[in-house]
Image 1 (spheres, rainbow, N blue to C red):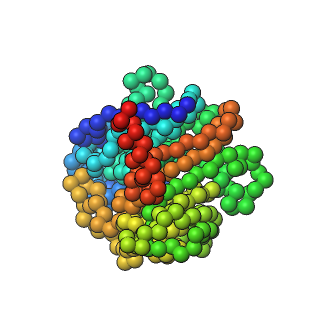
Image 2: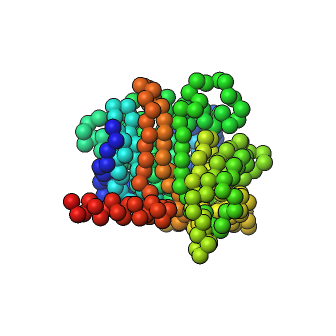
Image 3: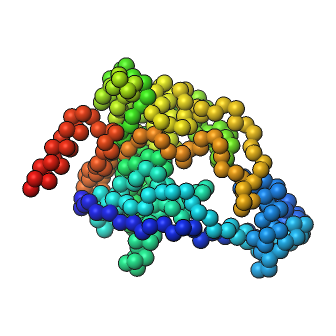
Length: 368
């Protein structure tokens, strides 16, 4: 049922740190401790950083702290790297519930809050708040079935049961498969529609634009799995952009974007590919590529915890742009009832008519 309530627990000053477990395989037997970590986890820290972590006693070898970086590994040995607690960057903690029933819950994710743990955000995530909320009621926690970028606000759908999770995840996956041409392989195709609202830079001339530019991955500093960009050798992606308002004075265009596929950062990439990046996007430039084109080198200096310094160049999780998952229409995963969910628009993404209507409704509410 539709609802409007909020939940959230304030973040502690520091998180609890993390532990990373490994069991030495035959192929790694005979390596030294520093060889193992500096090669297998090169994206986590440079060589000198791993040496510091070993010397500071952050690694155990078969249950014992080891500070000798040249200790030789044996097959079956258990290694644990203990990452020290740290203060994560600021992030909102209050989350609005838009819809909830026995099978799923839809949240209004605020901009600046990451969905799942990753990078510097291991605790300050939507998933953590869902876990904490469930623990209070001693119930299993809902699980997000898709992602929104950290800087993107709006509807985030989460499953409360295993069956709902499987079916909802298939809705999102099958939309992408449909774009790839696998049109008759699954009856779930077409069971979800996603509509976003965004503020693009510049004045978009055509009232509607269809973008089918493929999206692929390129190497990029501080992004271990690579950066998603517009690429002819990438995977198919489809976005339909409709113009809602052109603001010549501010040199911006308010757009509605409907997507069927769901490639990472798809709307940011497609709008920039068409020459109108989201206003304030720190990463993507005209053409669907990163603004930083000379970022091939990685800074080998390391931070206090031994890891790489925080990147000076923009990364995908950086905020600053205006993108909102505004509407979601889907077939209920168990009942097949058509459910329409709407996340209230931020003021920056409202048309003048919408802003007047909202102001009028708020005034009426205050007068009652």
